[in-house]
Amino acid sequence: MVVQHRRPAKRAAAAVAAAGIMACAAGCGGGAEAGERSADAAHVVRRAADRLVREGSSQASTSMEMASGGTRVTIRGSGVYDYRKGLGKLKVRLPQDAAGAQEHRPITELLAPGALFMKNRGAGVPADKWVRVETASLTDGNLVTGGATDPLTAAELLRGARKVSYVGESDIAGVPTRHYRGTVDLGTAAKAASAGNKGSIAAAAKGFGKGPVPFDVYLDDEGLIRKVRHRFSFANAQEKKDIAVASTTLLYGFGEPASVRLPRKKDIFAGEVAERDPK
Image: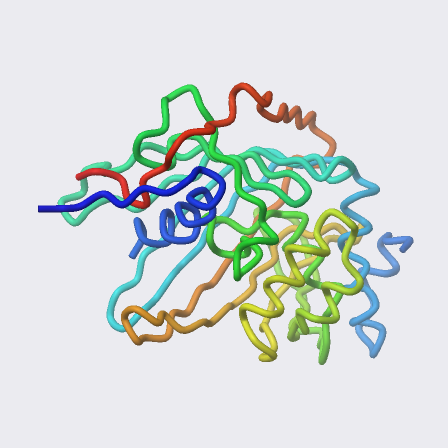
């Protein structure tokens, strides 16, 4: 017999996010800046988030690969993002079951400064209601919990870039790019982050510890991020295993409208949320 534990919504929301999706899965920016291949590479990479904000908006595709022991799963998402407002909308698709059947409905996620809104996430939540989570309350700052790293947050992590090197030219979806590689110091990134992301990245800096986060980023001739990949690692206390997570974000369709409307207060679920979905 499976016992469904319940708790007040404010506390349960964070638990659902933290245990939910992961558990279900098991300055100027221009061509000249992007072309730098010297010690200035770190400066170019650190300013990539600012370049996105000036551009305004884009479409995004996300992929989160998790490996623990011999198990590997991938969560994929797609949507749009408004970098000036810090708002995004993603449809996140959980992995299929072993038989190949779709086991879970796609989760709609709305990304906002300091908050994550989820629909179709949490047992006992009406279909027309949203679950709201404060990202700074999560030990990873929602870098991996939601199954997709917020595209602007992924870019802002690069503000803490260190030991950056130019790797070479690469083609991303038909677009010529310059590939840079290095590590991120989360504490430095948190201090340099925008007001909307500062709390979340600071929480991640505490949750992941002091270890650096390796990254690869691909910038086009205008200094825009076309692809960024971070590799996180953390301990799973329950299973006593280390979990490796590779979060990849692809950006394209720059300048296209990215209309994101956050839920009204009456549309946010205020009841009790079960920690697990029923079988």
